[in-house]
Every structure is written in C-alpha cells, then in structure tokens.
Amino acid sequence: MNKTDINKSIQNIINNLNNRNFDKAIKKIELISEEDLNFEILKKQIEIYENNFQIKINKFKLFTNIGVILFKIGKISKSINFYKFSIQDNPNFSLAYNNLGISYLEIGMFEKAAENFEIAFTLDNNELNAQKNLINILNLIHPKYNDNEGIINLNYRINSEVKKLNIKNYFDSKNIKEILELCNNLIENFQNDLIFNETQIFRKNSYNLNCLRHFKVFNEFNVIPKYCFSCYKIQINLFTIIDLIKLYFIFDNINLTKNNMRKCMVETRNQIKGNYKGYIYCTGIEEAKNVLEVINQEIKIAKLNKFKIIIKHGCSEFYQSYPEFEKINFDGEQVMKYNEEWSTKEKIIDERVPKRNDNDKKVWGRYVKGINLSDVLIINNWINYADIIGDFSYKQIFEKKIKTNFLSKALENQIEFRKKNF
Image 1: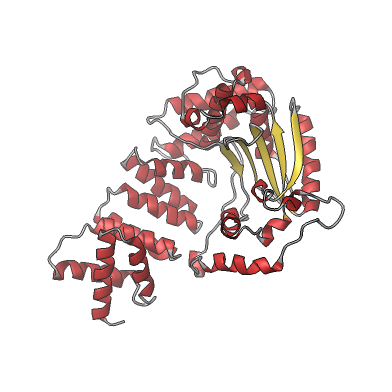
Image 2 (image 1 turned 30 degrees about the vertical axis):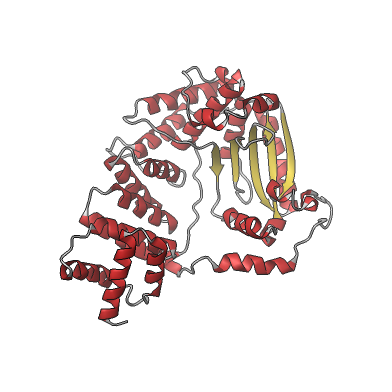
C-alpha cells in the first residue's frame, strides 16, 4: 500500500472512529497490511493527517480506540503500543491505563497489568472496571508491599496478616470469625469504598475450559461441543453459609493431582434450586470418581453439617435439549455420544475468532493460594445473601452491620423461593 492509500485509510479510520462506526473502522484496519500497520508508521500518519488538514484530534482518545480495535482482532502487542501512545499524549487518561492492563493480562504479563490497573484506579476512583480488574488479578500474583496506600497493599496486608494468625483449623467457627474480623477491619480503614459485585470464588489452574466458546456453539446451533462430552463436574450442595465458607477453605488448601479448577458460589439464577454450591471440574468420568473420593475425605475432616454431593455431566443448560446427556454410566460407555456432523458447526464458531501470532496468545494464569481481598469481599456478599434469605447462622461468624448491596435487587423476585430452598 503506497503512502497516498495509507493516508486515505487513516482518514477513513479516523472518521469512522469519530462517528463511533467501530465495525467499519475494524474492517479498514484489517485491510491494512502487517507491514503498513507498523505502529510507528501508523502513529506518524495520524500526526501527518492532523497537520495537513489543520484539525485538532484528541489523539489520546483516537489511540485508545485503535488499541481497542487491535485487541479485538487479536493483535494484542500492537494494542499495547497504542495505549502507550495514548498515555504519552495524555498521562491522566485512566481508561488507557486500564486497557493497557487488560492487554498485559491477556498475554500473561500480570505484574505490569496490576501496575496499570492501580494507576487507572488512582487517577479515577470512580473507574470501577479498573478497581475490579485490579482486585481480580491479585488472585494470580502476590506483589510485594510498596509505599502506595492502594489496593495492592491492602491485598498484601490481608494475606500476610491472616498468615500471622497461624491458624491450624480453618473449620472452627471462632477461627473463621477471627479471620473475617481482621480482614474487614483492614478493608474499613481503606481510603476508598470498594464495590465488588461478584458471588463466585474460584481456584483456577492454567488450563482453559473455554466455556464461553462452548456456549456460543450450543446457543447458536443447539449442539453440544465435543469437548463437553468429556467434561464432568462434582457438585456439592450445602445448606448454611458457614458450610459454604468452610468449603472455600477446603478448596483453597486441597491438593489435587491436576489442581482441578474449582469454585464456591451462591445461586442467583431464577428458579434454580439450591442456595450454596461448590464445583470441581474434571476431565473424564474416572478422574471425577477419584476426585470425589478425595473431596469426601476433606469434607469429613471439615465436619460439614449437611451436604449433598453428586457427579454431573457437562452443563445443566444442555439437559433440556438432550435429556440423554444428563445420564451417566459409571462403569462403561455413556448413553449419548458426540455427533461428528456437529463438528462443522463448531468450525463456524472457531473461524470467527481472529488468528493470533505466538506473541499475542492468551495466557491463563494459575490462582495463588491464600485468602485475598477478592475472597473477603465475596464472602461479605455471601453473608449479605444469607441475611436476605433468612440464613442467620452467619451471626456466629459475623457481627458487623450488614450493608445492602446489589444482591437485594438481584434476589427481590426470588426471596420466597430461596427461603424454601434454605
């Protein structure tokens, strides 16, 4: 592409971005060759365009928008360069720092991601996406203490102060109460209110289950992806908030051969039975049976009051369309088998995903062990949930005033249903 054509493309991209025609801008950027997409050349051409036409461009916004587009089409490294250009043009633009952090997170540069999320939140305490991103990434890394009185430091203090308690039994209600009091006192002394509307605590390994992709296949074509036929999960139904918190400590400390992904949660989906749940994700029925034996032993040690534990096949969303998929044969072949003709449907979904080079590959981090800020904030949300549905067992471990949050709205049409489940 010659310089005249590049200038026309840049002009077209700028016009589309200014008019918020992002799809057209994406198509124009995709048409520019890899060589011409060299970030320095593109930046220079934008500046030439600005000078030639004697117009003032908010380059920091333009560079950020180009960064977003490059991210969407899988050019993560190039998006990083444009976010940096945006910051050079306007060092106080918090959105550019947040987006830069997201790009670093995508390619596994977790420390750099955390630094930029913290800068974004420092610049704008109302930047809730940056706050959420920063709190979440601290499940992947434990940065060392620094002099900034920010979220990274708060997370560090929570993690280190709980370790100093040297608690041996995390299943004693008095010990749980002591941990929550310590952590919430640190949070209350923090300079900003923290809003964290999450209800699930994960312990992830570095393996991607790719569930979003699988649901795209199912939702668009009503076929079950091939991967899901080997996916089994252990579901643990609990009946009190205290047992859910105990299960969280089990999941944080358990040693599984494959470090299977696991999560604890409160149920907020309308008309879905059960209030408190835990899941462990497995590949294959034999692995699920082995993990079931391990978790049963751990539950006995924790002395949970009441629970129900089962192995499920794939996701419940599949069962209405394919009732046979729910049935599990523990001693041989499964009733339902994958239809190889469905592979063409899966291919359609996969071909929509932009191809990435090695430098832009998604990196999945492994969650660190130990209580983090996000864990405490989510447990606080669980306690709010318990209060709403009438599970007052939480008073054994939590004496502070319950603050109304997003769950009041989320559960307003489910309260009676939830109470019956309790």
